[in-house]
Amino acid sequence: MLQNVHPFKTRSIHIVRRYGNVGGMERYVWELTHHLAAQGHEVMVICQRQYEDLAQRRYLYDIEVKALGETNRNLPRWLSMLIFSARVRREIDRINTDAWIIHSHERTGDHDISTFHGASIQARKRRLLDWLSPRLYAWAWMEKREVTGTQVRAVVPVSDLSRAQLIEFYPYITHLIEEPVLPAVSSNFSSICRLERGKKIGFIGKEWRRKGLDILVKSVARLRQIDSKIQLVVAGCEPEMVEHLFREWSDGYQLLGWVSPESVFREIDLLVLPSRSEPFGMVAAEANAAGLPVIVSDCCGIAPLIDERRGRVFSLGSPHSLDEACMEELKHNRVVEKLNLEWQWVARRYSEMYRRINKAKICATHKVRFARLTEISDNIIG
Image (cartoon, rainbow, N blue to C red; front, side):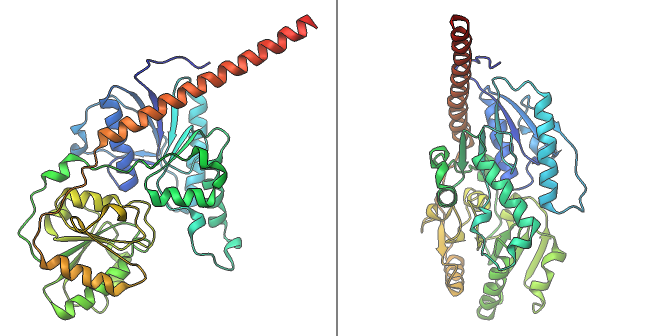
């Protein structure tokens, strides 16, 4: 039975595999849940694993976290997601979710609202033997379940680019697709003290192929033929996974592995995100907040926000335009204009959705009860 909750406060259960400041999407969930809690809303998290360190404890709010445990790390990612989804379903069945809004950030199937963080699997380049791939079939099935399930009441993209993809591939749920809720940026990025300017270009990203590290490596190699002082700093991906990209380099690069974005922003002078597909690009927004100019590809969701006051957008179809953009930005020691994306605003947007969805669920429940009472009354009279 659904219960009425305080008209201004909400209850939300958030589903995410990794809960903590360990990536773009994960940071979105972590910041959102803490700012919801700060505004007085009741929050629960169902995750596979919780990540926490002293730096994250600046928010001391009461959030119940149910960590379900890791799956076998040797399993392919799609199979791990299927297992996680099944565990989430069992956990939700154990919880009295009356008056709670279930908010998923993963490819699961037991939610009222889903934030669509990734690029659609439908947007990938088709290949002849795709139909033989259980991985592609599984991801396509999970994505369709996530956004078109009968219980889904809202799908939230994180950019206009992401919203356009959803409408293109799932036009029959256009009425469920909300206006984008852009990721915000923590205030601590604005307080970063950067070192003296030089000629260091930075890249941050775990999924280096999708994010176009190989494109940037070739571009910087060409730039170093003009100016050998230009360097490339790579973070977020395992060094052994990308060392082959630097086979012809003798120096001029650093492979840092996983480090905090804040530590990278102190060292570099320009951030480049040459992604082949990027629903938004949180690292670019964070670099902007730290005062860094950013260069992004035209396949990034954040691209419409990056103008000459904040950096440049280059065409992925013209790699040499990236060379020109980098050289121009490194020449000018300028102060960039910040986007001022705030998590408080993001939390307010979602709390409004939760209230609306909860009201609709209560109304639907009352209609079902009324229909049943009418049926019983008709049977008695008849």
